[in-house]
Image 1 (cartoon, one colour):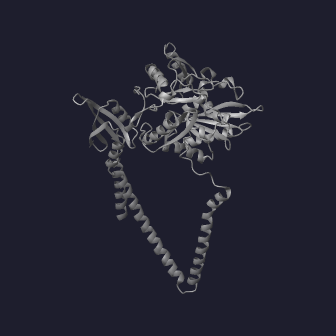
Image 2: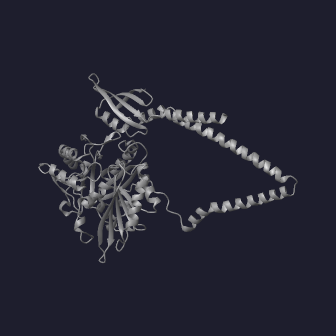
Image 3: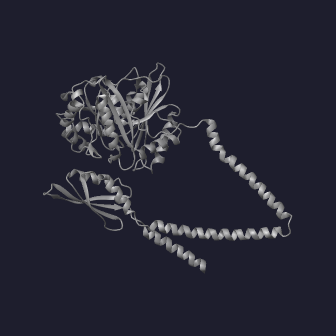
Length: 545
């Protein structure tokens, strides 16, 4: 399959992933709509959807009406910091925002579904015969640890697999960094909220777009602009066929240019690998902020390749009501998040990113009491024993001559000893601080991380420490595009503050390209260590005087 320019490279292969043999058996086959299986009664119970991105949490509130339908309303909280709350430093802000929404709308003890913006997860789609899907999922499991686009660290997945007909399966796999999904999971656990699942947002939007009967059997391009960049995909009959997020789609202009440039290849992808008639892919549905969607509509208004329109909340009067003031395209991702709860979708039909993260359920009341109170019982036993020993010593000293004087002398000696220990501890703390502030960076660990993340086509020729905080790397590759992917991946390394491509030199003899990359790490504050040592020295000299 030809590589689409600007497409994300995860590890050693390009998105999208397709079965090498699946196209001959599913070509030109119509996809049947996603079946909606009712797992439990869904009437007369509030349910909620939370859509999480880097700077906004959107909430869809579905309250039951007397006739069994739902009234949908919306709320959102914006992150007050520029770094966002899907980081270790922003976890407290995320927890506070979630708790505010939960308390404001009385969500606790009700069903809550969560979707995660595509900036933080990727989605892989596999279609074909059951054996082909099994083979593709096995290969995918081997490649997931090398997904560098999500940054370093362990990856976790969520998978949902269903049957289109007797001979064809459809599988959706979401991939996310464990550290990031752990932040979300811990935030919900800390506010005592249990969520049904966390799924990729683009999968839920594709499911909701399938409810529009105008595109019942025709594939459509869908694009979500609520995050930092546009999430692009192809959906058909409520199923996501492709998660395609080009790197240039981080602004409206880049999104439109990439879409125009890759449109024919996306059509061929549908025809060859997803069994869809080529000339049917001509509609683009966009959702997100009103200003962004309006700008994209104007840019693509004269396009001869694609018909662009806003993705509106589907009118399903038998299922829910939405006030005219809330009929905004920015609310579509939130509606898509809560929609599976409204129709009773089963957990096994959702690519749950919490599948490998969930801990055991909370303890019962008796177990909680025992867990909380056992330290009190142990302390009481220790207190009784200590009291008995103290009483025995008091009686012994009271019955002996000079016991009080000996006790006072022992107390004074103990006080002097404790004072000396306190002074020694203070000296040790100063020495430890000086050692921590003046230690040399672990260049061996940095070198190990860089070599492990190098793609197979990139050869590292030289690794040199230029100064106290700078590294100069020289390497060779036959694929020049891998240089920029490597630079982007190096920015995600811990303790790296700056990455700069110093230059590239093509070699006409072996068709390779030599490149030079400079990394700057967080500098060790040796001056702080010197000031601490100076302070310690002054205190010591004062003590001698």
